[in-house]
Amino acid sequence: MKTIILIGLFFTSVLLGAQNRTIYDIRGNSFLLDANMTLFLGNWRTATVTPIQHGTYKNVIVNGDTDVKSVTLTFDDAPDENNTYKLLDILKEHNVKAAFFMIGGTMKDDNVTVVKLTHDMGHLVLSHSFNHPRMTDLSASDMRLQLTRTAQRIESITGKYPVLFRPPYGSINAEVVDVINEHEMTTVLWSLDSLDWTLKDPEAVIQNVTSNVRNGDIILMHRNAVSVAALPKIIENLKAQGYAFVQLDNMIGIKPYREPSVVSDEWGCCSWLQRLLGM
Image (cartoon, rainbow, N blue to C red; front, side):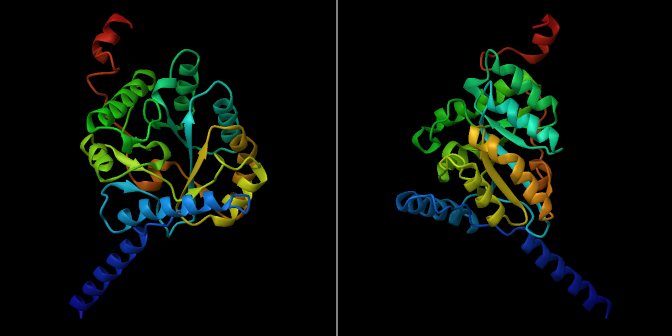
């Protein structure tokens, strides 16, 4: 009898684990999208998610735990000197932490301040490449350069070397995924596209997100004026629906940073030497 109970508990845990590992199709739509864009998005989503669901692409995240009523906010294309600050203010007002996938090449001059502020406010500062190319158009060596330069730039500002990477445009194939994995990083996509990058109407973005949301959704937004206008209502609506906002690393159960590397920037300066010299 005891053996039967143990076997039952084992299969129950397996089934529960399988539920938790459900990989969503990517949602996000609006009547404002024309037929060509709708077709394009449908084709891209199917071509991208199907290999992940079938296990062809390893270590690619689309969503979190589908059994828990929580979501996470992610913002692409920061930093800038305007909208990033506004997003940070809104998140602070609503007591929500988010993940910012940032472009390494724009982390300079005055933008360094907002990168550090984002980190110091408790948000994740993660990699979105160095100059926003389609990774599928690059050679393996150029892909590695995009990953390394951006992570080192982030580390030089925040002291943290990110290991979560979002490819620009969500553009991946087997070679891209392999290179990211070889770099000991995890590819993070999304399961709910706010469409703030194509919809110019904040109300349409709000409607899209609040009507398509599911447990464990990773929500894609951007550091643009449409997201700034839509974000407060999105947060309010989802909280009213009973969703908790959790940080991305907690959602997916993966640490966002690794131990500080010997190299802290693309010019090859050693971090310990920089600290010694007060650089």
